[in-house]
Image 1 (cartoon, rainbow, N blue to C red):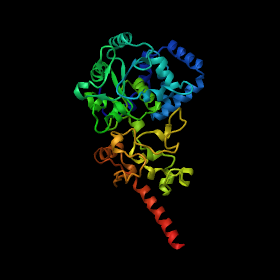
Image 2: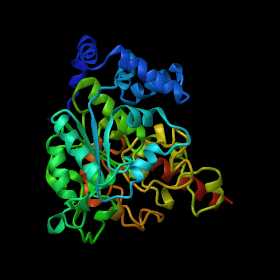
Image 3: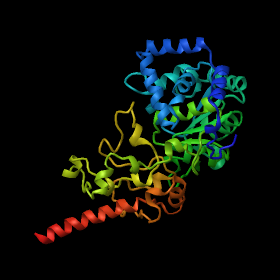
Length: 394
């Protein structure tokens, strides 16, 4: 498959999309899916609201809402084989552990999840046989989702899996080679995660760096279910991966900075910052940049869609962004709770908010920096100058 940035889905006619959905969807499967929703406490209206939300998140026109709904209701969809490598299982936990089952978790857990290392009740040889049978049965048709970094030092001996003691490196090479599409879910599988932090004794790497395959990265520690489900629904609708940035992240989800849509952005522009934890600024919800927030350096849609079914997100809860969807954030963004200037992070000039994620990414990859926005920085300076003049006048 090709991972080049390609907006050709705009050229696909509605008729072609409908024809594809007709080929992989049946009325019986749709009816069965709606029954599952209702038994879990969701009405058809709830489901249609959710599909409208996902359609908007994918930046598709309203005409696609009914198509997204059909794609989500497909029972015999592209099977998913979900592998776990070196990680904490936090991505799966975050995705599936809600007070009540979410529509997203129902789609994965009850509809298309063919194999999942940590959610299966069976163990040992029985699971190994199931995995091999699934790979053989769906060869060239399944989506392989990888969660976790790949230890590569000494031929990967620092991670062995299953009754045969296969290395994670070997398993990922073998399973991804027969997949139609490969997705790295979470920062560990995308970029190596905390396991790859210096000095990285196991040689942990993201999937692409470990085995060189083409892959779609859906980073975050953890990523939101919106980004995962949206990416999969795009593949189901168009039978192709969405346009990607230079770090192989879907642009629809990672094309804007946290800073650009942050609910505290107005306070940044006004020069109103939290100076220490628990101060008056913190109580008033002022900007957390001086407390080490990495929102200006981080590309993700957290402010728009949040976590736990849209309940909240870290900055909303009072803690700065730690840049967890960026490569090497565990080294480059640290320390997480100190002003960025003390952390050795510098904000260059340039295009500011007009820069693309690729342009910012190029800078960030080399010098661990990103542009904040000249007009915003200017407003901060003006605000400080105004406060200084007020003090002098007194």
